[in-house]
Image 1 (cartoon, chains in turn purple, green, orange, brown):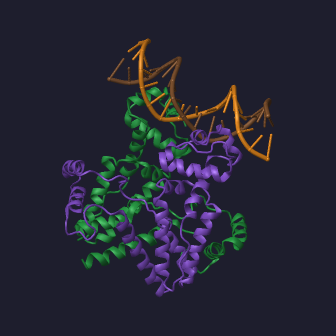
Image 2: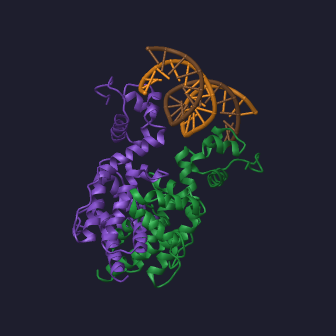
Image 3: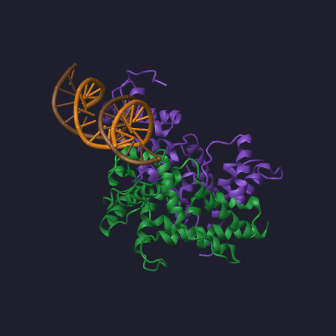
Length: 221
Length: 221
DNA sequence: ACCTGAACACCGTTCAAGT
DNA sequence: ACCTGAACACCGTTCAAGT
């Protein structure tokens, strides 16, 4: 989508927001300096007045996404507070599916990212975590702190029942355990979560298991 | 390093192993079809007889890394067995630092990767996990199953004491909690782990917390 | 101070041709 | 059956020049 005011003055903010919109529309692998410039009705080199290079552009895009995360809630229960903040981060990231990959690729965290992590550490400290246990907690939560985690299979788009059935049948001989699991998860009507694989449920399942484990260590420290 | 027998016939295996070696040497971002061809003393297009495109090349490289993982040990204790296998995966991946990123980027898992996951599922099932709990366990372990996990900070190379000291001092005003944590982790002589941040310890810490949580759920299912 | 145009040094991959 | 050469359609980024 071409900008409606192509003649408006270019600013860093306009460049970054246009980049976020473009990545949302066409995906991060299709985002190039040249296409972004074209979208803004400008020659590629014009961007370099507002952004040193592509990495700085990506950094600024991540800052916009992180900036959408809600501030921490104030509550006595550290577990609820951290949980809510992480789930808010997840909601922000979900609006921009390219964000996890870009966050992982960044060499150095930006001030915005540092502030986010700093306040997360603050929440743990306020909840009674020693500095060392806080450090371990950060490692244990890893990218979950940002609201995402690397999954075993890259199942970004859901399968239609036909191809799923075919997949399961094909896998039965070479990968019997995967076939059994897929069959059960997608067919079992008894499942609490309903049929199929609910990413949100799985994220919270693992998150709660880690928070519970950390809480136990916190009490015994 | 140029191949010692540039005139030997090109095979898929020779191409893939040369690609792994090149990535180990110069990093994955510097690995291009053209440089790989040059390294093999061959014109770029010669590679396309053995590999359909770059993605298939990356797939084959991952297969080599996954192939280096030890087979499962046979023991009554599922926790020890899974733990050992994951730590073996970690050792393989550590030899090829580019592998985590490539594994994450793969759209569809190869047969080799599928076999690895299938046998992991088998280990959990043999340990008494229901199919559904096995499914949750896979999500909870995520990329840890492959021996890696996304960290909050990308601290691939260790800092020298001088710049670390500077960083902590600079952070004290804007990011007080990060500064406190870095200061304590890197200075505390009481630390069980020794000074600084031990990636391996942190990986096992989180892994064991998850395995313990899963074991509790297994018993109560 | 900000934008432009042309150029450089790279990519992955196609096609048609060679042996 | 396997390798080659030239070409295409892209990249990010430089430099010197325009307004």
